[in-house]
Image (cartoon, rainbow, N blue to C red; front, side, top):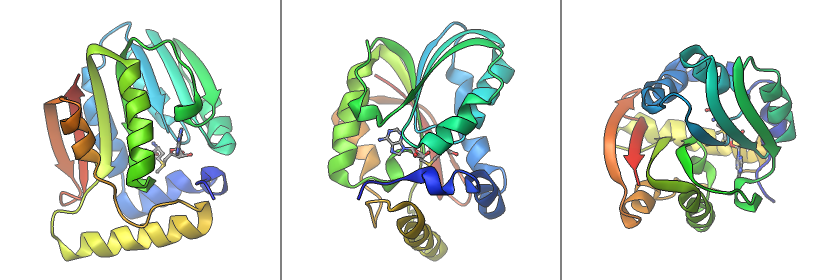
Length: 205
Ligand SMILES: C[S@@+](CC[C@H](N)C(=O)[O-])C[C@H]1O[C@@H](n2cnc3c(N)ncnc32)[C@H](O)[C@@H]1O
């Protein structure tokens, strides 16, 4: 069964804050410094859409955003966000099923890949890669294991919980970094959060 975050839409942000405080937000907002005015942005897996309001804090207008989220309940919350005078095209579907014109300046994948198997990751990555213009920036955040015992415990707990509630397909993190390396991306900036459990990177194609 494919993952379905619908069930978690009403509590997702509160649970994330309970466990991580503002860290998941800070990690994503840290990367938004790379969004230039008038950018054409693709966001995949934006959840409840708070990132739209963070982008609007930076630019009240001029952004063109394609916002793709597969869970209808997450999308319903996202549509209520204040996006200022920015243009947002909301698409409720799995990103890999959406035919887009490509040529995006920026792609944002905030904790999208963590729940995928390596097979799904490869498919979704390939699709997103084809959408980014040469020299474009990819803002990616995900969980990682750097050898601390509690990271593994927390990760296993998250996988067990989201498998039960949202039927996520993975039981372990896929090799996310490898996709960027194999496709010759260069790292522009990187920062870790929450005892290195979270990594935020901006890549250039
Ligand atoms: C772990 S949540 C992260 C949500 C949000 N980015 C945040 O940090 O609060 C992953 C989100 O990606 C969405 N998602 C999962 N697979 C997707 C896909 N193939 N295409 C688009 N969205 C997807 C889920 O519905 C969920 O809202």
